[in-house]
Structures are given as structure tokens and as C-alpha cells.
Image (cartoon, rainbow, N blue to C red; front, side, top):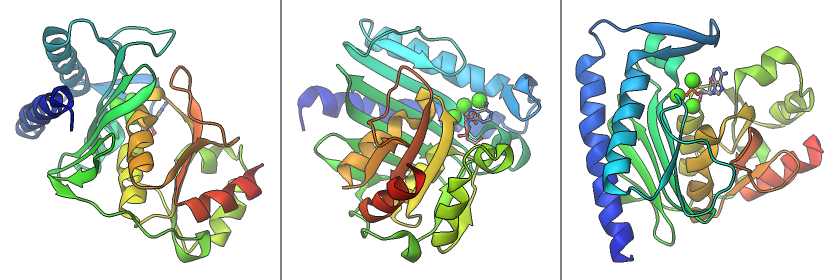
Length: 259
Ligand code: 2AM
Ligand code: CA
Ligand code: CA
Ligand code: CA
């Protein structure tokens, strides 16, 4: 592994450990909850604090890099040149507020559009999943193996609730019927992790933001899995995406059913 990547990996891992310790410690204290666009689109003081803290640390350690963060403390970017960080301070805010589990802190680093490092930290389970370009994927430092290439009929499908509620993609129901079962966790990051582990054959979701999907690209790449938009094109991190993260066989079937 190149020295600069190894050093940055150690730095990011330490930041995630330190910051998430505060999330766990402060969680039961007063949580300020605000609505963003709707009653199910929330932000808390903790989301904001985590993003501010990460942005501050990235700017100090890597002043030339650009940052795209959900809560708006980063930069707005029009291209992927140079080093770009994607920050989702708490992925699964609704779970964070209502469930006390199933939420994650996520980071992804791209160099000239190429994903080089990704992190998804399951905060309550204390599991840090990290992907490093050319080095595979690990969980708490333990290398993960490539999952089996399964068809839909041998695996489960994860999806996001807007597909189901808004009825925009009727084809998704056809895909669900071919699978062994449907799962909705409510954290794009943790659903990505399930695909990486092979416990879910495919994750299909509509209208996800760049920071929701950025870490998944390298996880899929390093494990021989597929990450595309519904039209089979690569993800575009300058806009929202309808995404499929899947085992290759399941992905091929989904492409046939969705297009
Ligand atoms: P978030 O919790 O970081 O907002 C399920 O809701 C998944 O979709 C979560 O990963 C959530 O990320 C993401 N998501 C993206 N846009 C959303 C929105 N407008 N409202 C709720 N969740 C959204
Ligand atoms: Ca949000
Ligand atoms: Ca998110
Ligand atoms: Ca978030």
C-alpha cells in the first residue's frame, strides 16, 4: 500500500473512532431535531457537529482537498478533479432518532474521480468497514472475502422506502418477487455493507445523494460486485443517482428487468 494512503487510512480511522465515541456518549443528552424537507427528513445537532468536526480535521490535515458534506459545511463542487472527500456524518438519521441502532458514519475519498478509500462505520455495533483501492475490504482490520455470486432467486433484495411508497418503479416489485425476500434497513451505507458481506444479493435505491452512495463504489469494486445506475451507467457523484449495488448475476437479472 502506498505510504500516503496508509498514513491517511490510519488518520481517518482514528478520527472515526474519536468522533463516534462522542456520538455514543452524547446520544442520550438533549438531541435537537429539525425537519429539513419533510417529517421523515431530519437533521440533529449531532449530524451537524460530526460533519463540522470532520470538515475541520480534513481542512487542517489536507488543506488542498475539497469536501462534499450532506449538512453543507463543505464545498460545492462542479467536477471531480483533485482529491474529493464525501462525508455523511450520520447515515440513517431517522434510525438514529427513533431506533438507537442502524446508523453509520461514512466517508469516501476520490482522486481525480477514482475511488481510493471508503469507510462505513456501524456505530452501535462498533464495526468499521473500510475499503482501500487494490487492498480489498476489511471489517475492524479483518480482511473480508469476496461474497458468492448469487442470482436473485438465491438471495434477498434490499431497497429504499421511496421506491415502495411512491410507486415510481413498478418494475422493482417484479425484481422483489424473484428474490427470496425484501429488506429495508433505512441506512444506504449499512445496506451497502450487507451486499459487501453477501447477506443481501442486491440493493436498489432511488434518488440517493452523492454521500449516500460514494463509499459503496469502492466496496463493490474491491469485492468483484457491481455498482451502477439503473441504466447500467457508472454512478455520477455530481448528481443524485438511482443505484444498483449487487452480485454480478443478480445485477444482470436486474438490468434485464428494469430496462
Ligand atoms: P440520511 O439518513 O443520511 O439522510 C434511507 O432513508 C436512506 O436514504 C438513508 O441512507 C438516508 O440517508 C437516505 N436519504 C437520502 N435522501 C433522503 C431524504 N430526503 N429523506 C430521508 N432519507 C434520505
Ligand atoms: Ca439526511
Ligand atoms: Ca445518507
Ligand atoms: Ca446523513
